[in-house]
Length: 430
Image 1: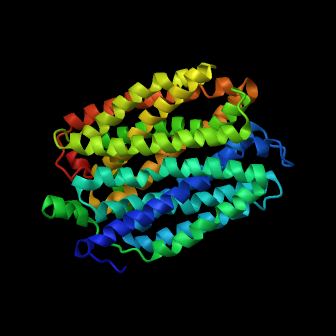
Image 2: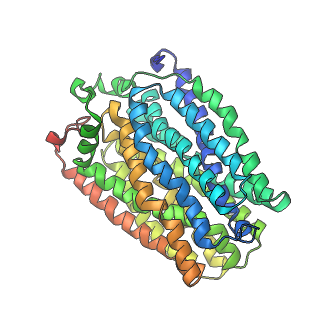
Image 3: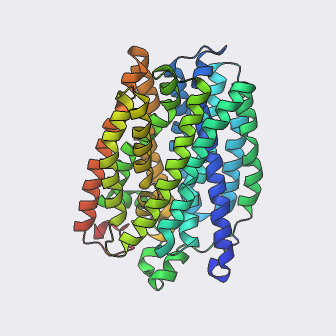
């Protein structure tokens, strides 16, 4: 497996962070290409409805969700860089093939294949980062890594919108798949440190019992017995429902409901996402790390309070027609939503043992997408087809409110759980 302790060369840890963050950016560019092309796909020779376009997101996410547990197991037991490279090549090729689709069925299949490749990356990369860096740095490291979400999403909107405007939606897919093929080679040659090395640096070697090998089914059952972990993931599912639905339909909402020209809608929303995402994610990682010094559950509380604050701003942004009001409201809502990106993912990996983090992330990925953005785009699209898109997007602030309540419950459960650190995976201790 070519496992090399990263402590022997700190530069490899930062190089790994740079490579993984770059790949994450391309990951989200590929993922949000469809969002920039909604109106073109609807009016293309394929003659798609909003509901069908929403199911394109679900096609990707269903396969992504179903294959995540498999890659979680492989990531906990095999060479993580090699599985990462495999996933990146697969999703990049599938993105390019989307541009060759001749009917809805072939486009649906191509988007579904993207999900297999991205499942490998999203489940394994947080585990690798957790072993590159100590707990004290993890919040900021994850903030940097997850800053790629708004940047990549914004690039997806802007790149997709501009390519669509000048060359058509097919060219957007064909060219969008190229960068990932280059980054796959860099991922293949990343170092694979021993599991738990980041915790060993900060926890004096950790607890040997926490590193014991468990069976696959026993491992997943233990996660379900870990109440703070379960509640955190369920809240994350509501968060993903809201963010996925908003991100998928917002450019179309700005165009069809607010009357903003198509090119401006994608570029404007892309600019909002990249700025608020960058600032919000960095701010969340920095504040979370500082607060964590005095409160072990600070990551959860920070995520809870920012989601409580974000909900009314999202409601205003989606119901008030005046640009002088809805644009500032969108900015504030997006800024607050992105604050929790680094902290909540740090919470997930910190709740389980080092040698089970890929599996924990896999179960998290499965849950948040199965209950989140697998169903939100087609559900919002179905409401839009039945009434209007203005009513469909109102499901977003409802999901945000649910997220805030469940994360509050998770933080309270974590405070009252008498569970030794790094033993949270053990049902006997929960």
